[in-house]
Structure formats: C-alpha cells, structure tokens
Amino acid sequence: MSTLSPEGFNEFWTAYPRRQAKKDALKAWRALKPSVELVAMIVQHIIQRQHTRQWREGFIPLPATFLRGERWEDELLDESRLAPPLGKVSERMAAMVRRARE
Image (cartoon, rainbow, N blue to C red):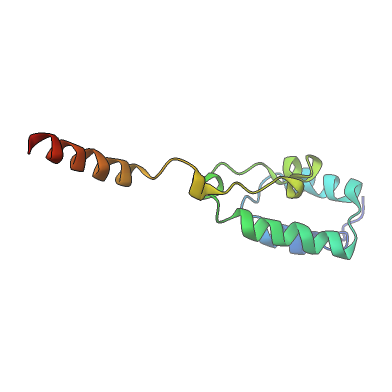
C-alpha cells in the first residue's frame, strides 16, 4: 500500500467532521476512484450535510461507511417540514393552557 494519499482524499478527510478509521476510509476511497468532479460533489455534500439536525446532533456515519454507501447521493431532508423544535412546542402548549384558563 502506498504511503501517498490518492487524489482528493485529503480534501475529503479535511471536510469530513468525523475523522475516525482513516485506514478504512482510505481503502474505500481507493476503491471508489473518484474523478475531480466527484470529489467536488462529495465535499459540497459534506458541507451541506453539516447543517442538518442529524449531523449537528452527532449522528455522523464513519467516513468509510459514507463512501461505500455513496451517501453524497442521499437526499437532504427539508427540516422545515419536520416537527418543530421542543421550545416551540412548549410555547404552543403554554398558549393553549392560557387560552383554556381564560
């Protein structure tokens, strides 16, 4: 195994927020053999994914899992359609209680 990283791996590794199991990630990267365009797409997806609730809460797959599963192809959820944050639910409940007491 070469000690040099394949083209684009360092960009991926730097962008990915969970830097664990690097050897396995490098093996998956070598198997993928991404083009320059694909490297750019993967890094862009990582940047977008970092703003999702799932990743902010720490539910980030290992890098090799992300690569083998081609997770950059996953659709990003429109979180505005999901349940509101707990604080907003509590505010609504408090408003309902106030109205019921009136």
